[in-house]
Amino acid sequence: MLKRPIRMPLVWASLSVAATKLKALTVEDETANSLLLELETAANLTEAFNRTWSSIHWNSSRKRTKVRVTKTLHKMAELIFEHLEESVKLFDQLCEEQSRIPTIPLTDDWLEIKDSLRRGKEEFQKTQGRFLEPLPLFKYLQNQQEK
Image 1 (tube, one colour):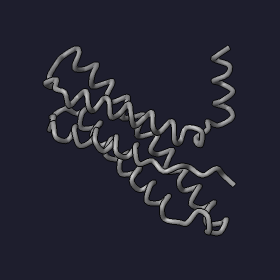
Image 2 (image 1 turned 90 degrees about the vertical axis):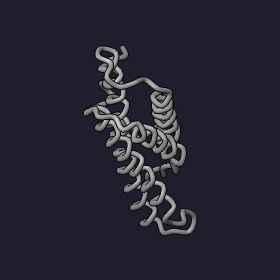
Image 3 (image 1 turned 60 degrees about the horizontal axis):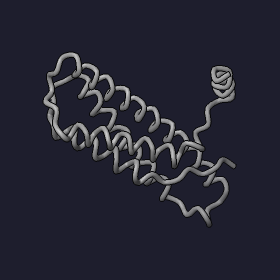
Image 4 (image 1 turned 30 degrees about the horizontal axis):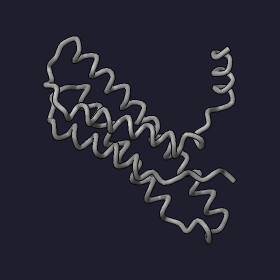
């Protein structure tokens, strides 16, 4: 049986804070709007992940149920990871754009968004990192690059 993922309430909280802060800024920038969409999607997926995880009694459920829910959770975790990575890329892209041509006022909210993204990613790696193993070919390629 697959290893069971762990609930992610801190990831959800971090992503929700980042999305709420960004939404409150009401910025008319395409990259910022894309970032907001990615953050909201990741936060909603994380909330659904936590609800799905809590939907069964892990100690008393049948093995088939556990396997089915675990597979669903793995797929959801992969989606969350993709949206989280895209959020980080978009935030970096937005910062790079603003360093060249500043069009958005820099406030403390941006630092909170950055910190929330960092915390969300770190917590995701702590809770789900060992369950989202790369495919064997990717592992091999990573090992070859390190040599």
